[in-house]
Image 1 (cartoon, rainbow, N blue to C red):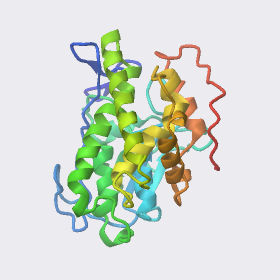
Image 2 (tube, one colour; image 1 turned 90 degrees about the horizontal axis):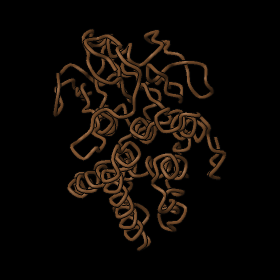
Image 3 (cartoon, rainbow, N blue to C red; image 1 turned 180 degrees about the vertical axis):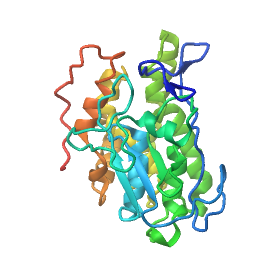
Length: 318
């Protein structure tokens, strides 16, 4: 945790609690937007113009929020436009760390050892948690955004002709439906698993638990009509936002977060849907079973022994 630019306490999973003892997530602090002409986006400042090799993405392969942005980068063919750095999967007392763990790397751009150093580079008096993803501007030497939902939208339209315009993850004709799905999937599933896993009271845990499985049951029924994706044949950002939670569910949330009523493997339509998305070009490159398991089971508050389970059997080609 940073307070006025100084690291003050060891990393803890619970950021804040509500009156029921429920987990409350920190609000993202940097909300600027990359746009094709550098004009201001919905929030933040202007002068973040889309340019090749100007922006750098900091991610963790354990993190579903960061994986959203990696998938967006893949689908929009922005790998040669936006460079990336991957932190190690295990959470340290100072949060995310760069290093030599397989699949991770060092921060050769800014020379940081920990993510929190990037936050204080951007704002010397920053207070809060140093989260991923972070979209970094090499030219202005600052953070553009640390909000994954915004970065995913930037991947879709913010880079203009530098991106593949053949796929639209947020098509105008479906935006109302996408927004409605996103809101519910976020509250009840994406963040719902964290509300269950990091609850500090039984009532808060059971409330989150019930919402998680009500949503999974609803999604199973929705996909049970034979459609390929949430909105039919159109693959959208709503599918990305759902997939990143589904792929982590049996690996981590089912056991570590006590969301153990059913597995995704017990839902035929959701299992088929997960496999369908995993088979899309480039998606497997954004998923690391090893990082997911090593990362979640490194959370000392939930797993003080640090033992990582051998199962379940979920194989992907890497």
